[in-house]
Image (cartoon, rainbow, N blue to C red; front, side, top):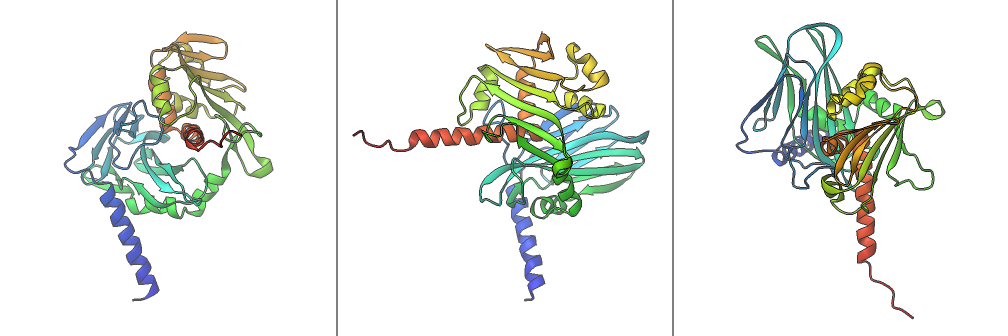
Length: 345
């Protein structure tokens, strides 16, 4: 058999294994309608950051337009978007977030997510797809539910993303995706402790990059395996976002507030309307089990703090990195505790 034929066969076998791993037998199709954030089961695991470590409904459908319907069939792995034409220029219709895992170039299995953003201008669909990962590089042995994303156009359907293309993004991203990943950099805010719970997001390449946002997570609980679930349920914790630039697009701010359940809070009306100004700080968390939200110096009660914290840590790329750093810190603490102690002299 020729070398290229062996390569094709190997690729098909790998894809078949991926699909078999993600099969959910007998799962009934579901449909989501209207503006909102909805979740469905991941057969390939969930990243750290959940309210419950046994929770499996972490894949996400977000619908931005009220006239949109999305059907999810877990048995044949199909997601179908249906919406009317729009006169807006590239209006965001919604997105899909699918979780899984893969082996990094360093040989460690890490959480991975595929984020697919769908826009529509008139009758034309536009799709942007991104990889969320806590470390850089390409990934092997990827396990992720093999969904095909389809748009319904009248009596016809159009395939927007195939499982094959999604899988290839993790193993061998295209030049465009490589450039996008290089253009957005995430680094530890601390030059001394690279594993601290505080990161800075920058846009641009090398010395021409500009820091735009700092994200941090603090907790009174020490890092340990599964500690985020316990912390969100009954601990003292806080997530802080600080704008380091006034160039963050307003629509991005508005959409992030929507995705993480913050958009309806009256204390954030100004933030919704004008977006972040340079050095604005948004904090939400809990003290002694009571949720709160603070924008700069103005604080208000927030009953939805735990749900918003869970969504941020599990569904945003910044939260994924913070949660993974905390997971590694917990593993290091556990390993140190389990290590045999030297005999006393």
